[in-house]
Length: 253
Length: 299
Image (cartoon, rainbow over all chains, first blue to last red; front, side, top):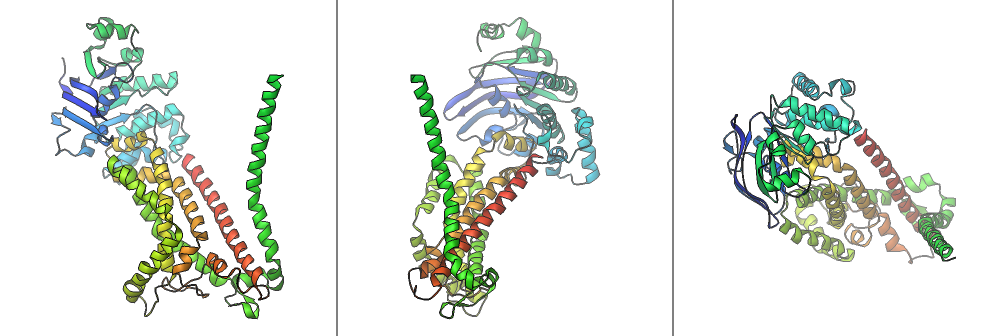
């Protein structure tokens, strides 16, 4: 591996409702690269992604064993404050979920929670993140309009801006383009490629074309286990494992 | 041929359903018109304004002032909502957002059980427990004397009765909010409470209002339990420790008795009409508010 790991998962096991969802996962996610998690539906990709920012905590009857180290700190250690972990990561879900407030307030939501109150500071932050996600020119005249008035693609970029506004190091994307049209998908994919200069990005996707276009590394998950991990071209073009081969060729889905 | 019969059946059934629906909806108008018709005698003698603003209730002298009853109704209902709404919002939030599945499984049936208890039992419980509590322990801190039979007693009993209604609607509303919306707030580092305060309550506010409307409508009309504890004194209450006499209690206490007094029957019908109008106006008002709110949330 050329870069040091940003997230290091060690012997992670997750049970939900007595079902063994993730089985003995160990993986190092490289720093400032795009890593895509691919695999058939229901294989545990999303669960793996959510284990990185402890969004699994709220699921009833969940049991998590093992370690997830972010910057060397085990986020499942009881002494760790969960909000501090989540602040380090921006999450982009399958469909955009703008908060029930204005465009401005959506972006300012996180910073306000973390104590930024000054109007000019917030203004600056909002403008900066809306520019980073390419929304600024589209919304600068209606910052106080409700976020639900934006198109789905714009909403997704707004959600990205909302995540970036708290200054994370990592961006987690959970099939973030699955509800979007091709043009919006392209915009989001380009954003990911640009953002990896500053952020470590982990994406869940089942679109192999997207995985190939955007990511540097690929993790193939099948039935709760990691089958293969490596640079994108290697995994997609010359898979070592039989299962990966079958998946990439479209035999299992 | 068979084809035609099938379509015919479809048409007949749908028309039949329409008729039944219209019949039940038209009951609203039938009741309204009926009540108005029976109120005409008293309306001939006294004007609307007199009936609504006069405080004298002396049927023997032909004086029918409904102001104390209207105020009694409003006091009791307002007190019950002030008590019940925060309690039920917090309870629903706890049940949906915080409670463990096992805890939920035990608590929710209990809440539902509350709504199944007959009003008269609440009334008896109010007389045995709430009234003495107010008389001996609460009222002495604030006023010189109270029998305990008061609009506060009525409000408390009523609050307990509408509490399960609001909780059951609100838990339904809260569980339908998408987990991803909560995740979106949690993911930027918000705590659960911050998420509830800034996102969940806002998103659920139309549901909270709808639940409140139902509860208030129920509270306006609740009769027996309130009648047993609120004193039934035809004066305008000036504090929560004063007795009150809500409209439903007036009707229930007097209808069928002393009908020989002229216009008495008509006056009671007017009381029913008033209650009907209050609930109707309240429902229309809340629809307007709800529509505004929904528009505000989406624009």
